[in-house]
Amino acid sequence: MIVARTIADARAALAERRGGRIGLVPTMGALHGGHEALLGAARRSCDTVVMSLFVNPAQFGDPADLNGYPRDEARDLRLAEDAGADVVFAPTAAELYPPGYQTWVDVAELAAVLEGEHRPGHFRAVATVCLKLFSIVRPDIVFFGQKDAQQVEVLRRMISDLHLELELAVVPTVRDDDGLALSSRNARLSADERARALALPRALATRDPDTARAILAAAGLEVEYVAVAPFSPPTLAAAVRVGATRLIDNVPIEEEP
Ligand code: AMP
Image 1: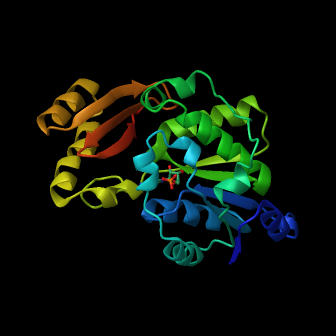
Image 2: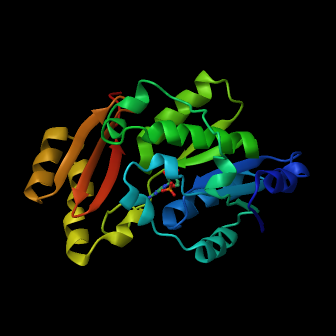
């Protein structure tokens, strides 16, 4: 497995692989079973699997969230290799945002609602860094998790609006046995917080926003939003705070036949 730290090295590593199908799995590291599912899907359908490993400072509104984000590159590289990655692109922030940087991609409407309303600037930063990664890696297909349903919608819109020549594959949310969606942020939950966080998947499983709200309130979780999002398919999405940790989750709602 090649680890490329610069854009030039990533392009050089991919130069002789352009004949085959290239898949890209963007991540922020702290890899878990969700990331492994994305890498597995890429491995099964691509000749070359590229994983990016970059904690994008621009998409964190809260400096404490950025500074406290779990990082263990050596472990991530081992897991990426075991999951079949051929190339890991792990740039520094200065490599992607050199002095004078000033270009941003704004998916205007979709980025302003739900998550976007509570995390201003978040999706602008996500769309921008993804477009950069797409431009550097030039993948045939990119893999994203249903766990971040609005991110998928924003990127699908960007790919369509900017006529990008790539496929977007969505991988179902991977959950622990108790139902909690895997997330790098789960590591921050105490045992008591984790027990209370289980109300989130339980609430969403009802597929009804009012019932979901009642379950979250009864569990004492601070609700940022619970809403049926107009995605395809329509999706019951929620964000809650459990102590100092913010968790999001969603379930697609079956469309009427
Ligand atoms: P992150 O490292 O949190 O930015 O996530 C990288 C990718 O993994 C994104 O496409 C996420 O949607 C996806 N992902 C994160 N958690 C899960 C999960 N539990 N199941 C499936 N995909 C996930």
